[in-house]
Amino acid sequence: MKKKTLVIGASQNPARYSYKAIHKLRYYGHPVVAIGLKSGLVDDVTIVTGTPALSDIDTITLYLNSERQNAMEDYILSLNAKRIIFNPGAENQSLKSKAEKKGIECVESCTLVMLTIGAFYLSFIFTGSLSSFLRSCPSGADPIFLMQRWLF
Image (cartoon, rainbow, N blue to C red; front, top):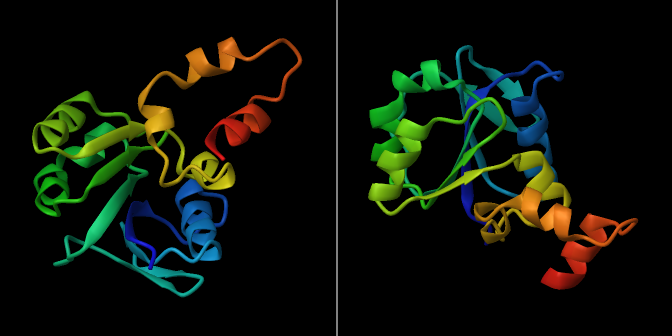
């Protein structure tokens, strides 16, 4: 059984990355809960507002900038997720430090990329320096192909 992912900053606008993440998570069969500024629906996932009581959240993937995260920081930490993904534009050193002190794995990466290359549950790749890995690839080599061969 796949683990539950919470998308914070969810939107029913197909142009938004949070929408694309919900869609792709569902495509790959991941259970998803979504919180947004407005209620709505993406595929079979209802977007709720506020800070609902949730349990068994494995991963929180953030699509809020650090300023908007401040209002939800205590809530995010109270969910006791195993991992928080800070998508591009959602980086937040303060929240990351507090989460790491609670033993929560923090990843600064893109949920969509992680799902695409099959590394959503192999985030250790991203906790190091992805740019270092990419720079170490031989000239002309496909880094995604090399990463997949290395993993599998």
